[in-house]
Length: 194
Picture 1 (tube, rainbow, N blue to C red):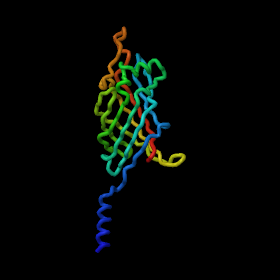
Picture 2: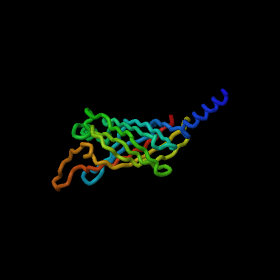
Picture 3: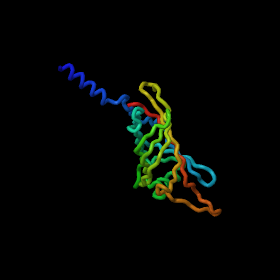
Picture 4: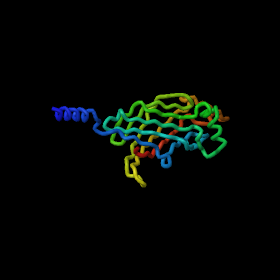
């Protein structure tokens, strides 16, 4: 009788256990990048953020249980020109004194192809939160030098900075504007399995 009860308990536990456990990844910052481009006059200026962190939970058996949390320290912006970077940190743009972080927190993850995901969540920039959807590509997994498992995720999205309250601009003599409103953002993440 005891053996039958123990067997029934094991069967019940097996039924409750997920078929494949979710995988949690932490950021490998040395091999990751957050970059952006915006129009300036008739060309484009490129910049990066140096200080950021991410955690990715991937559950292919139940993609809706997957999640992404991504945080950027806005003061770490770098466009290669210190004076311009200081201006971008000011109240006219990111206002890092009052809004130090750019944060993305996923609300839904949908797997749409073998390595393609649609990740919807809340993006907060300059104290303004908007719902956005990111097309995410999973670059695969492989053994990393020195041990462990590495994986890659990437996304590209175009944001309108005005949607986040970053509206400063200057009208030019020809009627055009100094800066574009659209910002092309590219994120390439190298992560390690925890």
